[in-house]
Image 1: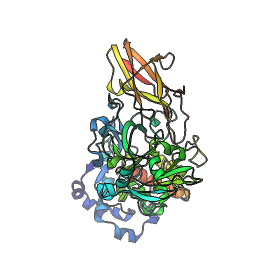
Image 2: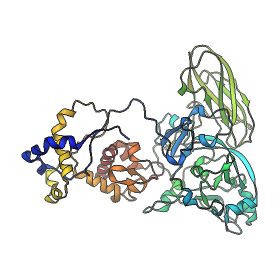
Image 3: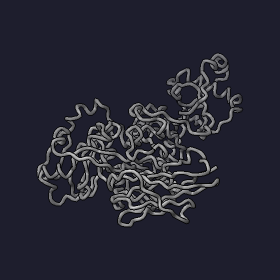
Length: 412
Length: 133
């Protein structure tokens, strides 16, 4: 990754063979490094180099994306454009394990998911599931760590801003229909525990790496086993051929490549549930006694204008954004141009795709030259307001606070 | 820069050294004054020779730590190609960041509570350095 200044060994060899023998320097040397060209660390670059899209997502729209690492790729703020549905080629990527290949998956319709903790446990193929029911729904898919980069406490982890989120149209079978066909949830089962079918590396306890999450059993009511995303077969990169969609629950709970859906008495012992993705007080490690990262909160942010795109012209300006209500419809969005001192009502625009999707909003303004602190605050149907400041936590999860999401707009 | 402890050097080490790596060390020493004029802003240790600690760090990375770092992390200098956690070549953590991850864990990574303080030091310094090679 470093732009090292490579000094070829060949250039140096001729000049120093004699010196080496004469000085007897070899007798002082310690254990050898693997022979490699002499490299010097280069001066730190002024701006981070733009990383290219990795191969498995080369089909995405590169100009819309920020590649943090091959498995953490964020959508640029303003690339959430006028389509309420985030196109596949602009949806963020966050994978906890490398995505399988098409060869790993094999015949899509033969992919099986084991249903357990029900009256009649059974392995069902996608072909089977397609016969059992059909539903489509739009939900906000949002990484648990979206907004982490905006926490004042600067927690460790990927510094997502707003781009680890999208609104997606799913097609599949409702979990409740499958469970009903299989004799219902067995007595005493209070969690829905699902396992991702990624190949696990060897030499490590599977529980340390398996993507297996438990959510409260109530979540099964609106959950879906989805095989299509935005009208296309679920892409491998996003969990294809089959993904569990749990509306209102953060990204990690929407298990990709689902191979097991079990109703259980206890939460899974997998590290990603037991100690991972917990709301831990700052300074403490993840622990099962802490709340799990499950439900998303009311949240909103500006999509245009973006601070990344430089100053805007003085005059009339449409400030747009998206807003979500967690498990509820958004009732209204207020926008402030002075960092929260005064608020104006924005207008909700575009279609209402249901309580689990987001709404688009716009505030028509007319701005003189200057700098404006633009904040947005969503309120749900039952009156729950987007919080001003989300609780800091070790993992930097679930940042929805409007103070942290305030942006500076320069008007020139 | 890591120091060279001559008492740790044995004849066996000499025999196993390749000619070219010896040349690399010598030419580094000879050219230090020349390249001193090149401004180095990077925090990486600029080391003309590798110490026994580098080998110890590499071994910890590949096998000694449990579970081995290499299972989840890529580190090209160690020949590790793990793909569960971030690549060290991408992250280029400084030693303090590695120490924090080893002591406290981070995200999915567990804390490595059975490593001794000496092992934590060797491993963190190795990763900080090797990730910049």
